[in-house]
Image (cartoon, rainbow, N blue to C red; front, side, top):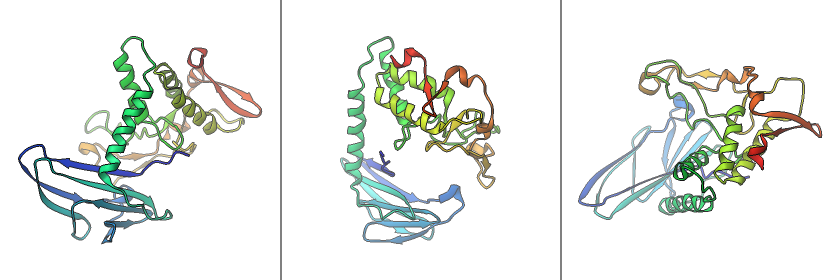
Length: 276
């Protein structure tokens, strides 16, 4: 399995003059329901709350002030400061020490190498096709290869409106078009991993209707909940997690993805133009 790094790196660099930098970390796990505790350790600032564990490391010292970590320092031209926020669950071993600057450089090199390996498309709108492939790669859940419709939840279709949906899932209809896009963009490995996720998520054949969407790990139950304690983006409520669309029957899905039985398992046969 390709494990995600689960590290968020932030770096500030001064190009000229002098800048006063303020840092404030105020995490609230489980969508703001938990106020965690903070503690200084040899590795950095450890944050514990519910099932989540966070470790903030960096090359500048921070002070713990109750339910937050803060710092203020000056940087001059050509100086930089880097922080790395590690996340793990309470059942995982402690996070290994990580050089934030090295991790950021590795990330840049990884994206550059990925782009260099996916230059096969030579047709019309080449730059736009390459950019679209990069976006699809960024929307891919690394452990399973699932491509999600959006990386966050509850961004409103209209500011102040209620159409604030959770799209952090994979739709079969969209997936069939995404597979074609990956294939056209010369990303066969990514298309194969996404295809494998689709077939594994559908599971063995039975009499139940084909579900139109799945979670990134192949989850079927995506029951929707509202988080009434959150104000939402620009006051757009409600904030949602989950999406009840998973219970819908949408017959046009079968027009995009044709399902047939092979050795008692579902396999998905897409249009020949995608796979040839």
